[in-house]
Image (cartoon, rainbow, N blue to C red; front, top):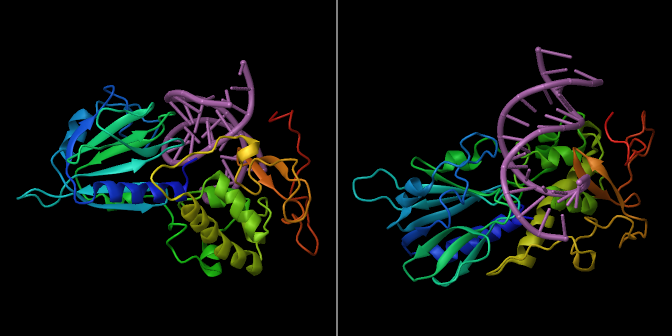
Length: 304
DNA sequence: CAACTTGTTTACTT
DNA sequence: AAAGTAAACAAGTT
């Protein structure tokens, strides 16, 4: 699943493959094969993108930047222009870059950028939640618009987290909120909370200084470790096959924790699957807990 | 067939 | 009233 690390790797790939090259053509397998709006709910999520995308033909890459899970790909201006066009890219839940020879398209290629070296860089996106948004103005405001600080780049401190992790929401729900911190998804939020030894259900206001320090340390550490492990020319998104699950808690309900041996628990938090170790991530604070933080979960009787 | 995934928007509940 | 929760939606794989 593309979270911050996969987007960062995608940024590096695109930088590598496009640096110093000019886009010779834009390939669209179908007129509306790629989304050109960030929102998936607006009625015009699928306007004809060919015209706007054609604006990058003949242009050289200036830079590829990333904030959270968004990427901004900017192109050179022509003579007389104040600035060139740019593309705001989001991988959605299954997007990735694939570089292929001109005569070969990946199975789920939604838009392809042919470079002057003949290679084509495709947005391959089976579920089509990804998008490539053509922009004529400055891309950078849109890169960060509505997002909190980047979870990897921003120097994360306990003080910074104390400012942003507020209210009664469970800490995992807040960590997944892109306006609080940009880049974490369900998998790496669960893994980072495990690393920090913090129960996902802990209300933000109940987080201790020690827990905030642990999170400030482990969130970037988790993300950086994944970037390092996965960096390369082709990213593979692992399916939910227990046999090849690279994660410590995610998708491991019922299995013994690698650290303490307790059975990994699974419940639902903020409408999403949640995995944690009751041994390593104790729920109750060491004094008293006014109310049980975890309700007895009724997996089969959901809502009403 | 239902669960699962992200991000946005809308509609409830507390 | 504001804060928080939930659901709907887009699409396709398991």
